[in-house]
Amino acid sequence: MKEDILRQIGTIARALDSIANIEFKEMQLNRGQYLYLVRIKENPGIISDHLAGMLNVDRTTTARSIKKLEDNGLIKRKNDQKNKKIKHLFVTDKGEELAQRIEKENTYSNELVLTGLNEKQRQELAKLLQQVEDNASENWHFVKNGGKREY
Image (cartoon, rainbow, N blue to C red):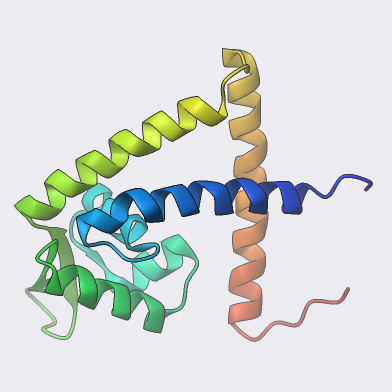
């Protein structure tokens, strides 16, 4: 393929990530932590292993981010009623307020980068990107679990 789609996706992702990191720095969030906060808000009671899988990151990285969010008073952990080793994650009131600001920025950024695309094009792009995301996630889980890809 002449076009390098992954390079374009990476450039878009890095640009938006850089903007978010600059804008969210004042919110006591370090690189990428806003992703964790919003996913916890969207999935109240999620456990860290499920959060890691959702974001396609390892458990150690997830644990570090959760700890920082908790230390900043943005999330809280609650013990599972049946298994005390399992901790469910919830946003605090402070985390809820911050997550709403992040979601507002996300909506703004989505509109900004989709400027010039009509509704049909936006829907088609979303459908195609979902397929690309599914493929990437499947490969990530395969390699993470010891699989070897043949180039």
